[in-house]
Image (cartoon, one colour):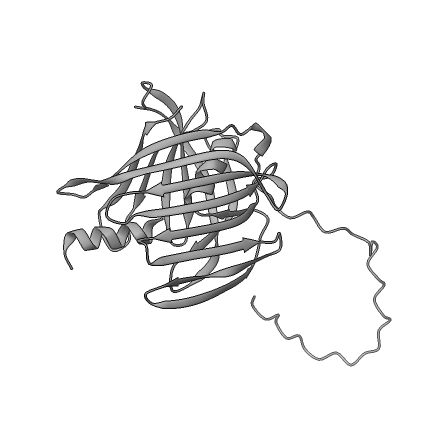
Length: 265
């Protein structure tokens, strides 16, 4: 496989134990009393610690670069626009993402206005692979289509779900940060062969000044880790926005995809 095709493929890929048995007891015993409180209310489900009302419309441009041990290649420009809209006649946030380069892609994501819960996600990669998902609050349904064939998707939907890169970056803008803070989330992983929800951990590892279109910016360094890998984000402290992203590329040991903000707030 040529290096160019390998980079293209990697970019597309990137975005109870039983109880012990006791000895038999044949003695007669009185029935156990019922629990003291039979009306205990279960704890509420975990939700993302964000307030979408604080979000503001934005338009961001990132330069994407593949960095290997012996080379650095600019592979395209990625744009992300966030605007107010409606979905099902209710207020919503609309994220529109386009990615150029060797693997062009577009994503459209609707999020609920207050809690940023995913409502709808469509994506096209390379002109031939497509994704369409609906989120009902307790389930996810839809499917993918592409050269390997079609796949139907039906999953239970957790309340702390991150669905796709654009949504993840938006949530990281609004989450409270502080060195040492940790949050658990659920992450939706979809490709043309499978769809699953995996556990994720968000950790704030430190602080760092990084370049941006308006000069050096003080950032929180945040890591999202899942069983399938990790990604690092630099989130500006004064104007919450992701200014840098760095993540490993599958199938290319030692290579990373780096995105740097080149236009926006």
